[in-house]
Length: 276
Image 1 (spheres, helix red, strand yellow):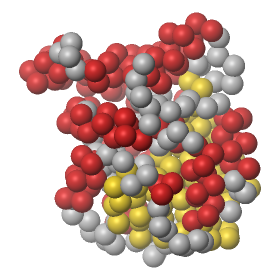
Image 2 (cartoon, rainbow, N blue to C red; image 1 turned 30 degrees about the horizontal axis):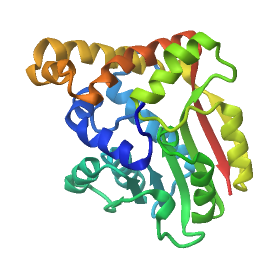
Image 3 (cartoon, one colour; image 1 turned 180 degrees about the vertical axis):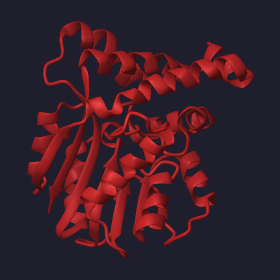
């Protein structure tokens, strides 16, 4: 059984650094297709713009990006909205990449740190955003309480989350959700009702919680195509995925599980907006 603590998550992303950027690009999150003809890049950036819209960002807003990864969403928020972003990641590889990128706007403050151990003052942030990071954190309720502490009264929380269905069948738990958690180093795949409870218990008022699975699930067809092309054209990728001594190679198998889990309804994608 794989570990799923912050150190294990960091090792996973550090070891798969080049692989993730090869298959996902800098954003490392789903695309959001409101228009079927959009390219993947357009859909990926649109997801961040929707986050900014729901966070009601204005020029100079202070934003905490929990699970900031390679910093692409933080840079977009800085460049397009003039936001002052503080980003948290536990991956040294992602942190180093983010620090090396130019920004045409307020430079984000990237912190290599578990967000639950931060030194942000109380009521300092105008918005806290979690773009597909909640499932990687062991203690989602704790993270949302920390988000509430950081936010000023009236501040906004936006969470884009990988979710389990409310009551998935046993076969889906065994063959899809369980392996996805193990192979993807996910601390949890909570149901929407669990996230709602965490959010209310942290002191937030939920404005809405939408199921947007239909708009994002195309992402996994795109990723599968990229994996197949990488296998056909990149010797290093083939070596990595066929190296029996490489424990993180199983993530390539998880891509297929994720595609199927969304298709059969075992996994959902939730979009939560709340106020402090």
